[in-house]
Length: 337
Ligand code: 5GP
Ligand code: MN
Image (tube, rainbow, N blue to C red):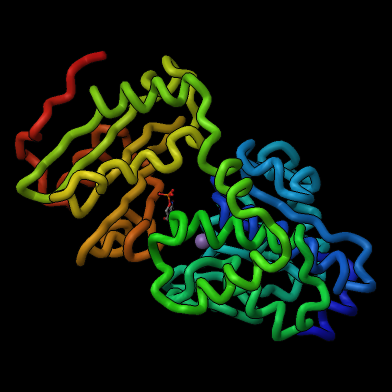
């Protein structure tokens, strides 16, 4: 792998749709290391199917990210012509949505670095996958140390990798029961990355609209089923339009369901153009990856999701059935806004 990186000329880096901190952090951290390690490279291009979320625009190198949505033909040809493709924080080509065919067709050497369950290994030449590990950023850090020691680690790379570690663990609350997660954090913090500043850039970024939307969501769009230990948010396109919020603004909202003591499984169902997006979260013994799989999605045991090509009403019905609350009366009925 070390040799391969050194000799490769055209490298493409890919991560999943609706990129989160781990996707952006691993994509850019990897790119910044390859900038130094891939000595023959003429091009190292990071691609995100629907671009970089605004909230991660402060990461070094984010201006180099090419959006599949904005530059589809360019992305398809970059993928087709690449010698080496690194797929980060995704377990199957379907996670890059409309770019998946280009990836499957490409003759590049394809490497997967990921921590989701059920990696679709058949599409890759080399697979680094560990569902026990906190984040792709952590896995990438260990892999880079194996390949290059600390030669290409610097504070910009460390900030990228720490971002993924921090966001995927919800600020070191989840999927961090292995000591290696904290070993990784300690090593990254030693590169003068200012964790408090990163925290502010990730967490304290609400627009007023977003804050008002959260108020609306909690008052009018949350159904609570205490006996079934479940709760569910649902938002139509109209809800989102009237508060002028995007999917990015809803990042993290689903976690509010679990803040109620008896709730063990929470869902957020969001209407999109022509499809419906589901986010699932769990605490305790519930495995939401299994629920997400029944909706054609996947993810992790405590955080999973799916994209359903059904109406919002049908999706809500299905999610309720999976949570065992279909036909039950919620504690708080939804009132029109
Ligand atoms: P979120 O609820 O934050 O969108 O996603 C949580 C996790 O669920 C993600 O890290 C990802 O692993 C998984 N996930 C979200 N959406 C989808 C989807 O449409 N398909 C699949 N297979 N996994 C998803
Ligand atoms: Mn991840």
